[in-house]
Length: 125
Image (tube, rainbow, N blue to C red; front, top):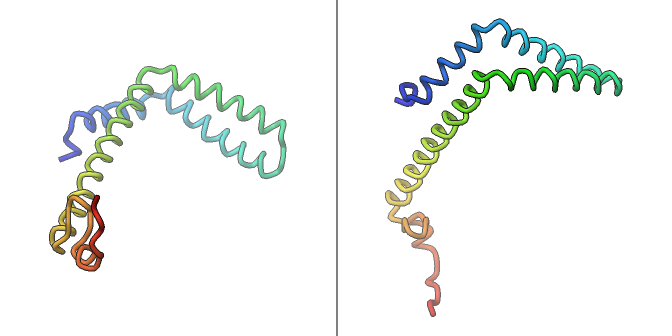
């Protein structure tokens, strides 16, 4: 169902374009290698080397961000994540409501049957 939505379809196509683009994969691989170096520099407290490596990573990241398909991919990734969050939230609400209803609870208060049975009546003004 979700895998067949327009958003997911676009995401898959954008990812394929990225993976097939030698320039993009080259930049990504350079970033990964520099990130590993940065971790080592940080571990060995090589502050100046770390600073230079982070600057190289930032420059490569900016170069990557300037490629249109990268921005389109990130946008589609956010759309797919939003869709998944909506589905998860809807499922969670339905399960909660079913639990409340099946225990004889109060949906408006969000309380299960045992909570309703065992709570003392409140004073209303």
